[in-house]
Image 1 (cartoon, helix red, strand yellow):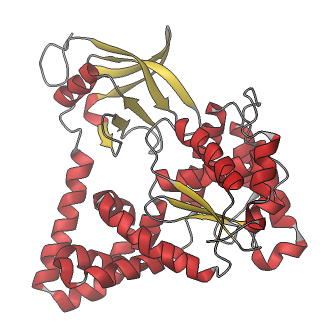
Image 2 (image 1 turned 90 degrees about the horizontal axis):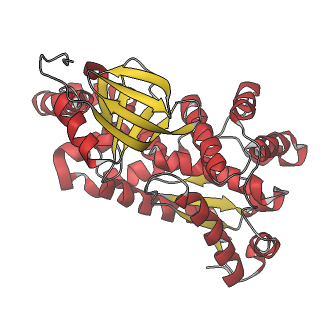
Length: 369
């Protein structure tokens, strides 16, 4: 057996890897590498990817995440087996093709900016937002967190009621968030807090801070509804949607800061932070966050149906029209149908005890920071 590069392809197999099919489903698969990359569910063949089409996708340390150019952009396979990782790196010669293209585009923009600063500056206000998806993976996580810290201060200033906190409520929220983070399938650096506002909303900031508002918790009828919203926001964190939204809104200033360094450092971070708060996610961002939530809830044995019911109920409540929960999360029949289509029945234990649910519901009745 030979590979496309003319060498003998020794077959390598890794069992128990993870495959995301791009439609909200996660499967544990066996991966076989020969002249193609093949996925199996036990003895059942799933798919085969040509080696020349395989590209690396951003992933946590210790994990190789790959996709195929011939498949859905939201479908990938996570490899944790060291032998398989080394074999893929050796045989898939174009593994880092996408990343190299991204780097070359950014440096071409930088070089042109130095040679034609005035003309390019005007162009960047239009070009950079269109390239946000390609630029975001190149932004260091340290800068993402710095933007998030400034955005966090801006967000708190918009809600003078402050952060809601009681020992019992904090503990209950922490346990719920931990269960979801542990089931995410990859390290997820996220922190969850509650702000005192009667607006029924939730949002994720760059760097991993997620806020639920008091009105959201008080509008929920069950822990599964809150868990569904949290899982959705965790999807935005995992996909770095806040950073990409910031780039789309204030991308020119952000890229100039990356090119010229500290000359624009403070201003760039402030601009990006404000942009991340005012930017709305795209329809694709929302659908991918929904897919993430459905898959995550399935891993903890809970149904995503309460999430869809919650979104429907809150968005239809005339008393809440002025503070529509989905101002930045556009609700549609297609989106609800997608959640219902990919949903699985609840098979696991409840995510919160009755005591924890009462404590979370009362978290804004105690002291505030």
